[in-house]
Each structure stands twice: as C-alpha cells, then as structure tokens.
Image (cartoon, rainbow, N blue to C red; front, side, top):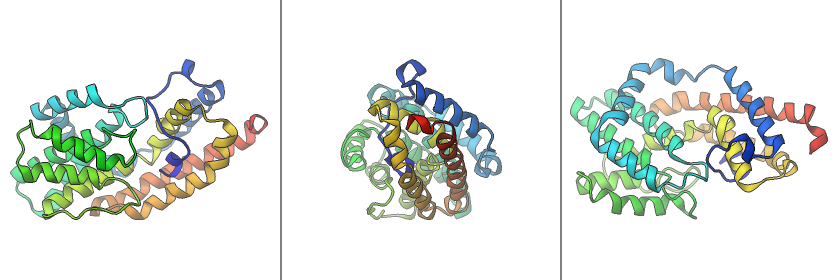
Length: 269
C-alpha cells in the first residue's frame, strides 16, 4: 500500500538474491532510516510496549500460536513472521494504552491484549491470496477453534483480521471491546508504513518480482501519495495521535531516497 503498491513483497532478501542496484539502494535506504529518530510512540509508551512484549514472548497460548504461524505463514512474500511479530507487539501496546484509557479492569485489558496479539500473529496468514483479509479471517476462524477462546472472542479476532486492510469497507463489531481489538490491529499494521517500509518492505517486493529500476521509479510518486493518504485512516485515539508521525518519517525517508536515486543513479534508469 502506498509505496507498498509499487510491487508485492517477500522475505528480506540477501544481497546475493537481489540485483546489485537494489542491494546498493537498500543499504543506502537503511543508512537514511538510521539517521531518523524512533517515532514518539515507543518512547512515550515504553512501559506498555514492554508489557506487550512480555505477553507476546511468554504467554503459553501466544507461544503456541506463534509456532503455528511460523510453520504456515507464506514468508517469502514480505508480510512474514517478522512483520507479524512487530504488528503483534504494537497492537498489544495500543491495547494496554487504550484499555487503561477506557477504564477496563486489568483482567479485561490483559485478555484483550491476548486477543489482539492473536489477531496480529494471524492477520497476514493468507497474504498471497486475493482478498487476503477475508480469506485470512476464514482461516483463523478454523484454527482458533482448537484454542481456549469463547465463540465471541474468536469472532472478535477474526473480524479484526477481516477489517485490517486500508481503504476498504469494514464489518462492524458487536461490542466496544471487539471494536477496540479491530482498531488496535489496524493501527499497528499501518505503523509499518513508516520507516519499516523503506528499511525492509520495498526491497522484499522488488527482489521477489524482479522489478526493473525504471518501473520502480515510474511508480514511485504514486506510491508516495498512497503512503501520505494513510495518515487520515488511523482508528484508535492513540493511533490518530501517533500514527501520522510514523508516516511523516516514512515520507521524509522516501523523499530523500527518491532524490538520491535521481541524483546518483539516474544513468541506470
């Protein structure tokens, strides 16, 4: 989406798997990314992030589900396990923050963290398929029947997966809690459209599809516009406040990279 629309994605390629120009541009892009500060979200919600990470790394149910996802996710197409884990932890962080703001009990908030982290692990399990969010939700519904969830909890997780695509219609949730699971997943997924996009994602895509550099540059401005459009789509209160900064950092990195390509590598286009 945005720049992600340029081409589709795969697992982070090694230099030997990429055309030399893309291996070089990836290294240059990563150097640019490292010069930018982390989004404020991680500093301002450091404790919530640590709490979410502890759940993701230590809760038996999440450990079991992560192993299942690792064995079944189509990891050569960009939205692999690393992406899923980042979304999982950020979605849990958002739930901690939003749950406290909503006045949820600790027990309820922690249960919702588990639900949204399950959604994060599974949300791109069918990424290679057309209408992947719908197919992913259907697949998750079958998988989760073997886990200790109520029918309503399974429905909340699956509708969150169903609703995680940008610029598409959503299915309404039956409860405030279910709606929050859906919104936290969406926002955490869209955080990846910031620096992560230029550190990993676009290089996965061009490597998988062997995209000519001329085609990459031709579609670059439209991709940047799509990236900018995501700023107004964040759904939680925390996402609306902090999500646009992720995108602004991504846009600044993208602009710098674009100018670098047109200055130093124009002879290759």
